[in-house]
Image 1 (cartoon, one colour):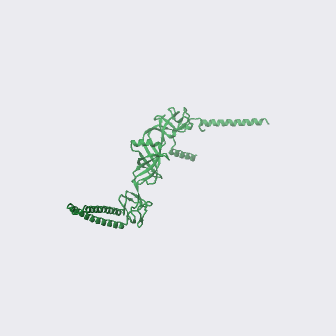
Image 2 (spheres, rainbow, N blue to C red):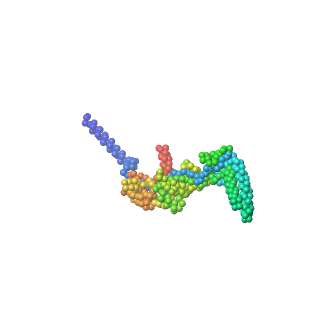
Image 3 (cartoon, rainbow, N blue to C red):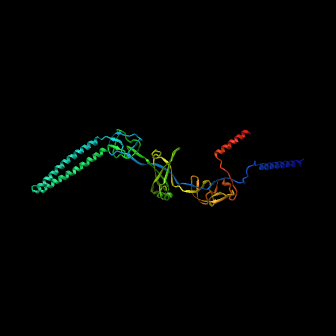
Length: 393
Protein backbone atom coordinates (compact mmCIF):
# COMPACT_ATOMS: atom_id res chain seq x y z
CA UNK A 1 0.00 0.00 0.00
CA UNK A 2 2.78 2.41 0.88
CA UNK A 3 4.53 1.91 -2.46
CA UNK A 4 1.43 2.31 -4.72
CA UNK A 5 0.25 5.73 -3.50
CA UNK A 6 3.42 7.68 -4.53
CA UNK A 7 3.43 6.04 -7.92
CA UNK A 8 -0.23 6.94 -8.43
CA UNK A 9 0.41 10.59 -7.41
CA UNK A 10 3.38 10.86 -9.76
CA UNK A 11 1.29 9.50 -12.63
CA UNK A 12 -1.48 12.03 -11.99
CA UNK A 13 0.99 14.97 -11.93
CA UNK A 14 2.61 13.81 -15.15
CA UNK A 15 -0.78 13.61 -16.84
CA UNK A 16 -1.72 17.16 -15.71
CA UNK A 17 1.55 18.59 -17.01
CA UNK A 18 1.07 16.85 -20.35
CA UNK A 19 -2.46 18.19 -20.70
CA UNK A 20 -1.29 21.72 -19.84
CA UNK A 21 1.47 21.67 -22.42
CA UNK A 22 -0.94 20.38 -25.03
CA UNK A 23 -3.36 23.22 -24.26
CA UNK A 24 -0.61 25.86 -24.57
CA UNK A 25 0.50 24.42 -27.88
CA UNK A 26 -3.07 24.49 -29.14
CA UNK A 27 -3.50 28.17 -28.13
CA UNK A 28 -0.26 29.08 -29.83
CA UNK A 29 -1.43 27.41 -33.03
CA UNK A 30 -4.80 29.11 -32.97
CA UNK A 31 -3.28 32.55 -32.21
CA UNK A 32 -5.17 32.93 -28.91
CA UNK A 33 -2.02 33.46 -26.80
CA UNK A 34 -0.17 36.77 -26.17
CA UNK A 35 2.62 37.93 -28.45
CA UNK A 36 6.07 36.92 -27.24
CA UNK A 37 8.37 39.74 -26.09
CA UNK A 38 10.93 38.47 -28.53
CA UNK A 39 8.67 39.04 -31.57
CA UNK A 40 8.71 41.86 -34.13
CA UNK A 41 8.20 45.15 -32.25
CA UNK A 42 5.31 47.38 -33.42
CA UNK A 43 6.29 51.02 -34.12
CA UNK A 44 4.82 54.28 -35.36
CA UNK A 45 6.73 56.11 -38.09
CA UNK A 46 6.94 59.44 -39.87
CA UNK A 47 8.62 60.73 -43.01
CA UNK A 48 11.58 63.12 -43.17
CA UNK A 49 10.27 66.20 -44.97
CA UNK A 50 11.04 69.80 -45.82
CA UNK A 51 8.95 72.36 -44.01
CA UNK A 52 8.99 76.08 -43.21
CA UNK A 53 10.08 76.28 -39.58
CA UNK A 54 10.15 79.85 -38.21
CA UNK A 55 13.19 80.87 -36.20
CA UNK A 56 11.58 82.38 -33.11
CA UNK A 57 12.42 83.70 -29.65
CA UNK A 58 9.80 83.45 -26.91
CA UNK A 59 9.54 85.84 -23.96
CA UNK A 60 7.11 87.43 -21.52
CA UNK A 61 6.52 91.15 -21.97
CA UNK A 62 4.53 94.03 -20.52
CA UNK A 63 2.39 96.54 -22.40
CA UNK A 64 3.37 100.21 -22.05
CA UNK A 65 1.82 103.37 -23.50
CA UNK A 66 3.86 104.79 -26.31
CA UNK A 67 3.34 108.24 -24.79
CA UNK A 68 2.03 109.36 -21.41
CA UNK A 69 1.47 112.73 -19.75
CA UNK A 70 0.70 113.54 -16.13
CA UNK A 71 -1.28 116.79 -16.24
CA UNK A 72 -0.42 119.32 -13.50
CA UNK A 73 -1.37 122.94 -13.01
CA UNK A 74 1.22 125.64 -13.73
CA UNK A 75 -0.64 128.18 -11.62
CA UNK A 76 -2.31 128.20 -8.21
CA UNK A 77 -6.04 128.72 -8.19
CA UNK A 78 -9.49 127.19 -7.84
CA UNK A 79 -10.65 124.67 -10.43
CA UNK A 80 -14.06 125.84 -11.60
CA UNK A 81 -14.92 123.27 -14.30
CA UNK A 82 -13.87 119.83 -15.59
CA UNK A 83 -14.62 119.29 -19.29
CA UNK A 84 -14.25 115.49 -19.57
CA UNK A 85 -15.20 112.23 -17.87
CA UNK A 86 -12.79 109.76 -16.32
CA UNK A 87 -11.69 107.16 -18.87
CA UNK A 88 -12.72 109.32 -21.84
CA UNK A 89 -10.73 109.55 -25.07
CA UNK A 90 -9.49 113.09 -25.74
CA UNK A 91 -7.71 114.73 -28.64
CA UNK A 92 -4.64 116.93 -28.53
CA UNK A 93 -5.74 120.49 -27.69
CA UNK A 94 -9.04 119.55 -26.05
CA UNK A 95 -9.97 121.65 -23.00
CA UNK A 96 -9.65 119.63 -19.79
CA UNK A 97 -9.86 122.06 -16.81
CA UNK A 98 -10.80 125.68 -16.17
CA UNK A 99 -9.10 127.53 -13.30
CA UNK A 100 -10.62 130.77 -11.98
CA UNK A 101 -9.10 133.41 -14.34
CA UNK A 102 -10.20 136.60 -12.51
CA UNK A 103 -6.99 137.25 -10.51
CA UNK A 104 -4.92 136.76 -13.65
CA UNK A 105 -7.11 139.06 -15.74
CA UNK A 106 -6.61 141.75 -13.11
CA UNK A 107 -2.85 141.20 -13.26
CA UNK A 108 -2.93 141.54 -17.06
CA UNK A 109 -4.93 144.79 -16.82
CA UNK A 110 -2.42 146.22 -14.33
CA UNK A 111 0.50 145.24 -16.56
CA UNK A 112 -1.18 146.82 -19.61
CA UNK A 113 -1.58 150.09 -17.65
CA UNK A 114 2.10 150.05 -16.70
CA UNK A 115 3.07 149.55 -20.32
CA UNK A 116 0.97 152.50 -21.45
CA UNK A 117 2.44 154.72 -18.69
CA UNK A 118 6.04 153.90 -19.54
CA UNK A 119 5.41 154.30 -23.26
CA UNK A 120 4.05 157.80 -22.67
CA UNK A 121 6.99 158.73 -20.40
CA UNK A 122 9.48 157.31 -22.88
CA UNK A 123 7.90 159.23 -25.75
CA UNK A 124 8.18 162.47 -23.74
CA UNK A 125 11.78 161.72 -22.80
CA UNK A 126 12.72 161.20 -26.43
CA UNK A 127 11.17 164.56 -27.38
CA UNK A 128 13.17 166.24 -24.61
CA UNK A 129 16.40 164.66 -25.81
CA UNK A 130 15.71 165.74 -29.40
CA UNK A 131 14.94 169.35 -28.33
CA UNK A 132 18.03 169.66 -26.17
CA UNK A 133 20.24 168.18 -28.86
CA UNK A 134 19.09 171.01 -31.16
CA UNK A 135 19.87 173.58 -28.46
CA UNK A 136 23.22 171.91 -27.87
CA UNK A 137 24.21 172.66 -31.46
CA UNK A 138 23.68 176.38 -30.68
CA UNK A 139 25.69 176.02 -27.41
CA UNK A 140 22.65 177.02 -25.41
CA UNK A 141 22.69 173.99 -23.03
CA UNK A 142 25.50 172.13 -21.37
CA UNK A 143 26.63 168.61 -22.21
CA UNK A 144 25.73 167.51 -18.67
CA UNK A 145 22.08 168.36 -19.27
CA UNK A 146 22.05 166.38 -22.52
CA UNK A 147 23.67 163.41 -20.81
CA UNK A 148 21.10 163.52 -17.97
CA UNK A 149 18.19 163.53 -20.43
CA UNK A 150 19.66 160.65 -22.42
CA UNK A 151 20.08 158.62 -19.20
CA UNK A 152 16.46 159.25 -18.26
CA UNK A 153 15.41 158.10 -21.76
CA UNK A 154 17.36 154.83 -21.48
CA UNK A 155 15.92 154.22 -17.98
CA UNK A 156 12.36 154.63 -19.24
CA UNK A 157 13.11 152.33 -22.20
CA UNK A 158 14.28 149.64 -19.78
CA UNK A 159 11.22 150.14 -17.57
CA UNK A 160 8.98 149.84 -20.63
CA UNK A 161 10.70 146.58 -21.63
CA UNK A 162 10.22 145.22 -18.10
CA UNK A 163 6.54 146.18 -18.06
CA UNK A 164 6.01 144.56 -21.48
CA UNK A 165 7.65 141.38 -20.17
CA UNK A 166 5.36 141.47 -17.12
CA UNK A 167 2.40 141.89 -19.45
CA UNK A 168 3.47 138.91 -21.56
CA UNK A 169 3.93 136.79 -18.42
CA UNK A 170 0.49 137.85 -17.14
CA UNK A 171 -1.11 136.85 -20.42
CA UNK A 172 0.70 133.50 -20.25
CA UNK A 173 -0.58 132.95 -16.70
CA UNK A 174 -4.06 133.74 -17.97
CA UNK A 175 -3.65 131.09 -20.70
CA UNK A 176 -2.66 128.58 -18.01
CA UNK A 177 -6.15 128.98 -16.54
CA UNK A 178 -7.35 126.78 -19.44
CA UNK A 179 -5.58 123.41 -19.18
CA UNK A 180 -5.60 121.54 -22.50
CA UNK A 181 -4.60 118.01 -23.53
CA UNK A 182 -0.96 117.90 -24.73
CA UNK A 183 -1.57 114.64 -26.63
CA UNK A 184 -4.35 112.41 -27.91
CA UNK A 185 -5.17 109.47 -25.68
CA UNK A 186 -7.29 108.07 -22.90
CA UNK A 187 -7.73 109.80 -19.56
CA UNK A 188 -7.36 108.09 -16.21
CA UNK A 189 -8.82 108.90 -12.81
CA UNK A 190 -9.36 112.49 -11.73
CA UNK A 191 -6.94 113.99 -9.22
CA UNK A 192 -8.95 117.20 -8.79
CA UNK A 193 -12.59 118.18 -9.11
CA UNK A 194 -14.48 121.43 -9.59
CA UNK A 195 -14.02 123.59 -6.50
CA UNK A 196 -10.65 122.12 -5.50
CA UNK A 197 -7.66 124.38 -4.96
CA UNK A 198 -4.86 123.31 -7.27
CA UNK A 199 -1.29 124.43 -6.68
CA UNK A 200 1.46 125.13 -9.15
CA UNK A 201 4.33 122.66 -9.05
CA UNK A 202 2.51 120.06 -6.94
CA UNK A 203 4.44 116.93 -7.91
CA UNK A 204 2.51 114.60 -5.59
CA UNK A 205 -0.86 114.57 -7.33
CA UNK A 206 -1.58 114.89 -11.04
CA UNK A 207 -4.89 116.39 -12.13
CA UNK A 208 -5.22 113.51 -14.60
CA UNK A 209 -2.94 111.17 -16.56
CA UNK A 210 -3.35 110.67 -20.30
CA UNK A 211 -2.00 107.54 -22.03
CA UNK A 212 -1.68 107.22 -25.77
CA UNK A 213 -2.94 103.73 -26.63
CA UNK A 214 -2.64 103.58 -30.42
CA UNK A 215 0.01 102.67 -31.31
CA UNK A 216 1.35 101.02 -28.17
CA UNK A 217 4.59 99.45 -26.90
CA UNK A 218 5.31 95.93 -25.65
CA UNK A 219 8.53 95.81 -23.64
CA UNK A 220 10.35 92.51 -23.02
CA UNK A 221 13.80 91.04 -22.53
CA UNK A 222 15.74 88.19 -24.15
CA UNK A 223 18.95 86.46 -23.01
CA UNK A 224 22.15 88.16 -24.07
CA UNK A 225 23.29 85.20 -26.21
CA UNK A 226 20.65 86.20 -28.78
CA UNK A 227 21.95 89.77 -29.08
CA UNK A 228 24.19 89.16 -32.10
CA UNK A 229 21.47 87.29 -33.96
CA UNK A 230 18.92 90.02 -33.22
CA UNK A 231 21.23 92.76 -34.44
CA UNK A 232 22.02 90.82 -37.62
CA UNK A 233 18.40 90.14 -38.56
CA UNK A 234 17.34 93.69 -37.63
CA UNK A 235 19.96 95.11 -39.97
CA UNK A 236 18.60 92.88 -42.74
CA UNK A 237 14.98 94.04 -42.45
CA UNK A 238 11.86 94.30 -40.31
CA UNK A 239 11.55 91.79 -37.45
CA UNK A 240 7.96 90.68 -36.80
CA UNK A 241 6.78 90.37 -33.19
CA UNK A 242 3.52 88.82 -32.00
CA UNK A 243 1.93 89.38 -28.60
CA UNK A 244 -0.82 87.30 -27.01
CA UNK A 245 -2.49 88.56 -23.82
CA UNK A 246 -2.95 86.05 -21.02
CA UNK A 247 -6.42 84.59 -20.71
CA UNK A 248 -8.68 82.29 -22.66
CA UNK A 249 -9.86 83.41 -26.07
CA UNK A 250 -7.43 86.30 -26.43
CA UNK A 251 -6.34 87.08 -29.99
CA UNK A 252 -2.73 87.50 -31.08
CA UNK A 253 -1.60 90.97 -32.14
CA UNK A 254 1.20 91.57 -34.66
CA UNK A 255 3.76 94.37 -34.57
CA UNK A 256 7.41 95.00 -35.33
CA UNK A 257 10.59 95.38 -33.31
CA UNK A 258 11.46 99.09 -33.00
CA UNK A 259 13.92 99.33 -30.10
CA UNK A 260 17.03 97.40 -29.09
CA UNK A 261 18.69 98.68 -25.93
CA UNK A 262 22.32 99.83 -26.08
CA UNK A 263 23.41 97.79 -23.05
CA UNK A 264 22.87 94.40 -21.42
CA UNK A 265 21.45 94.41 -17.91
CA UNK A 266 24.30 92.93 -15.83
CA UNK A 267 21.91 91.87 -13.06
CA UNK A 268 19.79 89.62 -15.29
CA UNK A 269 21.98 89.03 -18.36
CA UNK A 270 19.16 90.16 -20.64
CA UNK A 271 18.80 92.90 -23.22
CA UNK A 272 15.70 95.10 -23.30
CA UNK A 273 13.60 95.34 -26.46
CA UNK A 274 10.43 97.15 -27.49
CA UNK A 275 7.95 96.32 -30.22
CA UNK A 276 5.37 98.75 -31.59
CA UNK A 277 1.83 97.48 -32.21
CA UNK A 278 -1.11 99.17 -33.93
CA UNK A 279 -3.89 99.07 -31.36
CA UNK A 280 -7.10 100.53 -32.84
CA UNK A 281 -9.30 97.94 -31.10
CA UNK A 282 -7.54 98.50 -27.72
CA UNK A 283 -6.83 94.79 -27.23
CA UNK A 284 -3.50 95.69 -25.63
CA UNK A 285 -3.73 97.66 -22.39
CA UNK A 286 -0.97 99.40 -20.41
CA UNK A 287 0.37 97.24 -17.59
CA UNK A 288 -0.91 94.02 -19.16
CA UNK A 289 1.38 90.96 -19.36
CA UNK A 290 1.61 89.24 -22.74
CA UNK A 291 3.35 86.26 -24.29
CA UNK A 292 5.80 87.54 -26.90
CA UNK A 293 7.15 85.69 -29.92
CA UNK A 294 9.89 87.27 -32.06
CA UNK A 295 10.09 85.79 -35.57
CA UNK A 296 13.62 86.31 -36.88
CA UNK A 297 13.33 84.24 -40.05
CA UNK A 298 11.10 81.64 -41.73
CA UNK A 299 13.50 79.26 -43.55
CA UNK A 300 12.59 75.95 -45.17
CA UNK A 301 14.43 73.11 -43.41
CA UNK A 302 14.65 69.33 -43.20
CA UNK A 303 12.57 68.21 -40.20
CA UNK A 304 11.38 65.16 -38.29
CA UNK A 305 9.01 64.97 -35.32
CA UNK A 306 10.88 65.69 -32.11
CA UNK A 307 9.58 62.37 -30.74
CA UNK A 308 11.91 60.54 -33.15
CA UNK A 309 15.02 61.80 -31.35
CA UNK A 310 16.79 59.44 -28.96
CA UNK A 311 19.75 60.14 -26.67
CA UNK A 312 22.59 57.67 -26.51
CA UNK A 313 26.17 57.45 -25.30
CA UNK A 314 27.40 58.87 -28.61
CA UNK A 315 24.82 61.63 -28.80
CA UNK A 316 21.45 61.95 -30.45
CA UNK A 317 20.20 59.44 -32.98
CA UNK A 318 17.05 58.19 -34.70
CA UNK A 319 15.92 54.81 -35.98
CA UNK A 320 15.46 54.76 -39.76
CA UNK A 321 13.20 52.07 -41.27
CA UNK A 322 14.77 50.64 -44.42
CA UNK A 323 12.94 49.24 -47.45
CA UNK A 324 13.34 45.76 -45.93
CA UNK A 325 11.34 46.96 -42.88
CA UNK A 326 14.44 46.80 -40.71
CA UNK A 327 15.58 49.41 -38.20
CA UNK A 328 18.86 51.27 -38.69
CA UNK A 329 20.29 53.45 -35.94
CA UNK A 330 21.44 56.74 -37.47
CA UNK A 331 23.32 59.53 -35.60
CA UNK A 332 21.95 63.01 -36.37
CA UNK A 333 22.84 66.65 -35.77
CA UNK A 334 20.01 69.06 -35.01
CA UNK A 335 19.92 72.85 -35.12
CA UNK A 336 16.89 73.46 -32.93
CA UNK A 337 13.45 72.18 -31.95
CA UNK A 338 10.44 74.29 -32.87
CA UNK A 339 6.72 73.54 -32.55
CA UNK A 340 7.29 69.79 -32.08
CA UNK A 341 9.74 69.41 -34.97
CA UNK A 342 13.51 68.92 -34.89
CA UNK A 343 15.46 70.74 -37.60
CA UNK A 344 18.01 68.30 -39.01
CA UNK A 345 21.43 69.55 -40.05
CA UNK A 346 23.11 66.22 -40.77
CA UNK A 347 22.28 62.50 -40.82
CA UNK A 348 19.02 62.21 -42.77
CA UNK A 349 17.71 62.81 -46.26
CA UNK A 350 14.26 63.85 -47.43
CA UNK A 351 11.77 60.99 -47.80
CA UNK A 352 13.34 58.58 -45.32
CA UNK A 353 11.13 56.91 -42.71
CA UNK A 354 11.95 57.29 -39.01
CA UNK A 355 10.48 55.66 -35.91
CA UNK A 356 8.52 58.09 -33.72
CA UNK A 357 7.10 55.66 -31.12
CA UNK A 358 8.06 52.24 -29.80
CA UNK A 359 11.84 52.76 -29.84
CA UNK A 360 12.35 50.90 -26.54
CA UNK A 361 12.01 47.47 -28.20
CA UNK A 362 13.70 48.43 -31.48
CA UNK A 363 17.11 46.84 -32.17
CA UNK A 364 19.31 48.15 -34.98
CA UNK A 365 19.39 45.67 -37.86
CA UNK A 366 16.23 43.85 -36.75
CA UNK A 367 12.81 43.92 -38.39
CA UNK A 368 9.99 46.13 -37.14
CA UNK A 369 6.23 46.11 -37.67
CA UNK A 370 4.80 49.45 -38.81
CA UNK A 371 1.46 50.22 -37.17
CA UNK A 372 -1.01 52.96 -38.02
CA UNK A 373 -1.77 55.43 -35.22
CA UNK A 374 -5.15 54.94 -33.55
CA UNK A 375 -7.32 58.00 -34.07
CA UNK A 376 -10.17 59.06 -31.81
CA UNK A 377 -12.73 58.06 -34.45
CA UNK A 378 -11.18 54.64 -34.87
CA UNK A 379 -11.08 54.11 -31.11
CA UNK A 380 -14.78 55.02 -30.92
CA UNK A 381 -15.68 52.56 -33.70
CA UNK A 382 -13.69 49.80 -31.99
CA UNK A 383 -15.44 50.45 -28.68
CA UNK A 384 -18.87 50.40 -30.35
CA UNK A 385 -18.14 47.12 -32.12
CA UNK A 386 -16.97 45.58 -28.86
CA UNK A 387 -20.17 46.62 -27.12
CA UNK A 388 -22.33 45.14 -29.91
CA UNK A 389 -20.36 41.90 -29.77
CA UNK A 390 -20.82 41.61 -26.00
CA UNK A 391 -24.57 42.29 -26.34
CA UNK A 392 -24.86 39.58 -29.01
CA UNK A 393 -23.09 37.12 -26.77
